Each structure stands twice: as structure tokens, then as C-alpha cells.
Length: 384
Ligand SMILES: Cc1cc2nc3c(=O)[nH]c(=O)nc-3n(C[C@H](O)[C@H](O)[C@H](O)COP(=O)(O)OP(=O)(O)OC[C@H]3O[C@@H](n4cnc5c(N)ncnc54)[C@H](O)[C@@H]3O)c2cc1C
Image (cartoon, rainbow, N blue to C red):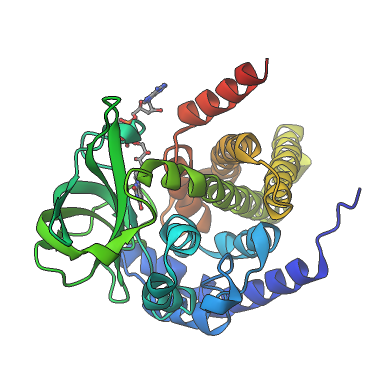
């Protein structure tokens, strides 16, 4: 057993930490207040080779693997969760369907600009009437000669409305199979396609600097070569890349929990009440100890799922466990850290107030905690 991070993961983490200290941390509060998406940061991440960490070198990526990706996310997410959440959606659910199922021509056309950081990617699954129940989506793709015609609405989609958006990969129903089951397809809809409209940025509890919108597709006509992978397999394809997405959200949660602890430790050492630092009170010290213990347990789960993924071994259940635990630890840690900060932690200029607001979505996005528990329980019962 070796619990040390490999050298390349340590190196990439250091690179991201140094970059984030200079280019993200000093500005994150301002971006959040103004709900400003910092495109220049993502272009710079592209120049550092960090926009395609899970994509092959042949398509402009780094092929660094999940362990290095998690190490990078720990540094990025501790600096700012809005930037890290946009990077999460871009690196996993937006890029991986193209990387796993795209043709050579589709990869050159769309994956390369995503992996090099020229553009940012988006994936649209969720709809106003279909969230956890992904199979119930209503967006339809109808074949018309050599084309596909898409109609429907996607909800809460990340990264689709920024100045560097390339388009959106969407899941749509393509018809009904002979067994009565719906068939699904995945389609790339480039920005500027007639009939593809974006709503105004949605106002959120947290992740203010991350772009989130409703997308509407009205008779959107796409050439046949915009279908990614096989017609009929769209939902299976999405579920296949979702495990990687869950490792990524788990790492986002880990980074938020660690940042919350670091801020709490600093405040507990600096702030004096009753003539001593807050950390001198056992009630406060025990909170710090509980946070640190839970964070180490989350870290072990997240890196284990990442390591399994890198070994090419099954990791669905482990990714669900990591996402479930790390996102709940993140919420507990952020709440405990605000408590230790007292009233100062409730003020918007405090960094912890931003992490606290950013924490809740981690228990909701890319499969809620309830859905993760369903996935884990199903795997356990199947094995029996
Ligand atoms: C900021 C933000 C960004 C997002 N980005 C994207 C994106 O880029 N692309 C995308 O496709 N989607 C995106 N989403 C959507 C996100 O993945 C969904 O919000 C999430 O999957 C939950 O779906 P829902 O909101 O419709 O909730 P629902 O599915 O309606 O769930 C509501 C509640 O019911 C519970 N519930 C539902 N079914 C069950 C069940 N079977 N058993 C137990 N409990 C259940 C849920 O756990 C939850 O607590 C984003 C959402 C947000 C808020």
C-alpha cells in the first residue's frame, strides 16, 4: 500500500495551487458579487494544459488520469468553487461523451477546442420535468432525411451561455423501441444553430460566477454527423461517463471541506474571547477535530474511487460513495466553520460565507444524495 500521491499528481497540484493563489483567490469574492464568469481564467488554465486533463494527448488533452485530476481539483476548489464547478462540468460531463463516443472527425472538430481551453463545454440532460429521473426526459430528436430535428427544453445547464461556449451536448429521445422502451441519442448542438436559444443567467444560492441557464430547442436542425455515438444508446453512454463526473464532484466537495477547515483553524487561532484564542475552548477544538477526521475519510474515499478508475477497474459504487460522503462532509464542515467564525462568518465579505453558500449544491448536482444512496444500495443488493 502506498498512500503518497504520485509525483506527477503532486506536481500538477502545486501548479494549480500557485496559479490559483495569483489568478483566482484575490478576485473570487468580486466575481461572485458581480456574478461574473472569468473567461480569462479558463483560457489560462488551457495554456497550462489543464482543460483536458481526462482527454487523450492526441486531442489536445493531458491524459493525466483521475488521481491527478482530483489532486488538481483539491487546489482549484479551495480557491473558488464557482471556477472549480465550471471546470468540473467542462472536464467531465461535457468532454467525456465526445472523448468516449465521438468519431475521429467529431473529436477534431469539438473535443480539441474544449481540451485545449479555446472553448468551454456544456452538457444538457436535466429538464423542467426530469431531474433525478433522467429516463423521463421529453426533449425529442426526430430523424428527417439526413438530418435530426430537436425540440425541447433543458434546465439548469452549466457553461452554455459564456463568451467561450462552443455549444452543448444534449440527450434526447429518438423514438420507442419494439420492447416499448424509449430510445435515446446524444447530439452536439453548436452555438449559433437556428432555433437554439439560451435563457437569462439563473440567480442561484451559490456558484454565482458559474453560468447556469435554461436552454430551449425549437425545430433545431442538425446534420446527421452531430449524433454522438449510437442512436438508441444515448442514456447508457451518459451513465457511462457519469461515474467520472461523480469523482469530480466528490473532489469538489473535498476541496470545499478542506478550505472550510483551514479558515476555521486560522480564525480559531486569531480570535480571542474570554482572554484566550477560540481554539482553547474544547467545544471549538472538538469541532476542528471532527472536521479534520471526516475530511481524511472523504479524501480516502475520493482517491480510492479515482485510483480504481485509473486502473481500469469498476468504480461506480465507489464513485457514488465518494460523492455522497464528500458532499455531506463539505456541508457539515462549512456549517461548523461558519459557527466558529461567529457573526463574521455570516458576513458576505468572509470567504467562509461563500463556501457555505456553495456547499448545498454538492448534495444535489450530478445525482442527489438520495440517488447516490439508491445506486450504492442497488449495487450491494445485486451482489447478494
Ligand atoms: C447550479 C446547478 C447546475 C447544474 N448543472 C447541470 C448541467 O450542467 N447539466 C445538467 O444536465 N443538469 C445540471 N443540473 C441539474 C442537476 O443535476 C439536478 O438539479 C439534479 O440531478 C436533481 O434534479 P432535480 O433538480 O430535478 O430534482 P428532483 O429530481 O426533482 O429531486 C427532488 C428531490 O426528490 C428526491 N428524489 C427524486 N427521486 C428520488 C428517488 N427515486 N428516491 C429518493 N429520493 C428521490 C431528490 O433526491 C431530491 O431531494 C444543475 C443543477 C444546478 C442547481
